Length: 387
Image 1 (spheres, rainbow, N blue to C red):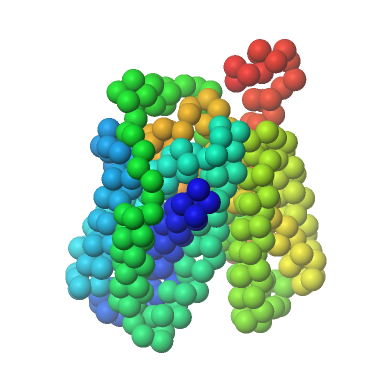
Image 2 (cartoon, rainbow, N blue to C red):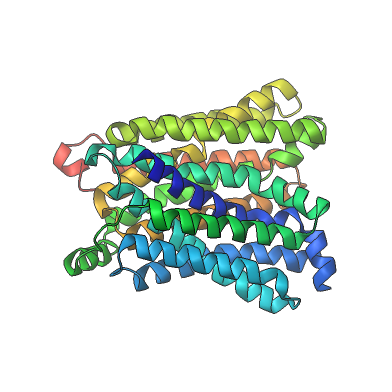
């Protein structure tokens, strides 16, 4: 089943790269569409908005369809829309297509996680299986922006869209033959999936995910200016550091997956502590290059890599149905948006110093640790399990 999980991982990698591809080639797109770079930047936000709001809607519509067919439908349509974007030379049409691709991307996340849970060797291996699937986030996040930037410079920004569309099409064909068929959720299971979304316990765990991802992205987003401006690293060295950060995130994701099923809370407590300490050290000693780089890599190990533990805790109270998983994806996307937005606000107030974003990320991690603590207070086991 591992090969199937890696296939799902590649799907998530592609849609993660698609989210960031515009950010890597904004000047080229702005020139071609005869608009400003700031308006092109909104295309990234529109994609994220589609993921957050449209993903659950798509998953809801597909809830009675076989998982394989649902996933193939989403990936196939994504490939078509991704290929159509560069054929259109009107900004608002491109914006609409980006929103639609974002909707399909959000659904791909939820459907892939649900499918990955079904393909786990046993119920006690769900966290490990999901960690493999979610590894695509690390790869796509790290390579999406620099690769799109390179392709736009060497060829054209349109080529980036064609390449991702082609890869998605190849994944569609590979999945058609390779992924096993599974029965769709029963009417009762679908209704239970919907009822689970009314659970306060579930939303309290969603909140931990929101704050944890907000901490990771509220800092990660501003690593480049911090490393170059505060630490004095060259652009080439910064690129190497960021690629190594991605490798560490991928490794951390796999390690967390090994322990997520049986020690999710412990993993999160350690991860939050590492984030708080590492980001605080970066903020205080940003001018010390070697120390900053070391802490950045620690953030890679303990930041976004906590995803499998977050998913495991959500699955404990909400199951792994399409809606619960896709809404969790939306919450994570909102965490990215919230973390980066709050960091941008605090930086603007404090003189645009990237070190302020590190303090903001540490504050998010503190809040996540506090919320987690309220859910895991050592009362009687029956009382604690009800939170």
